[in-house]
Length: 136
Image (cartoon, rainbow, N blue to C red):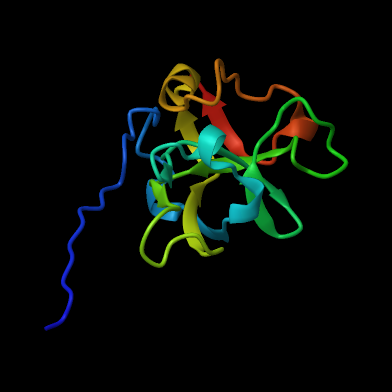
């Protein structure tokens, strides 16, 4: 008898979006799972929608505003549009995910969604922002 399982997958909490602009134009990027840690970035088995990302070596990693722009980890490349499953099933490998890099984002909601971040402030220095996101 075959083993049958089911799961419900949604888009996540998108209350961090300040508008619908940019959603239809989210670009496809590859998430570098090895750059994320379970206890910090995905304690519930998934990286949450709205997570700020940087692009290093062609792969998306956690955005870290405290580092310089040398490795690009300190350059915001966008926000994860939908939840990204990391644990269970075929998850846990580097795969494609939608990233929004323009539109309006509620910075306070991004911080509220992410237990790993006590605060989130959108970058104000052009060199640390590779997006056209307006933070409200």
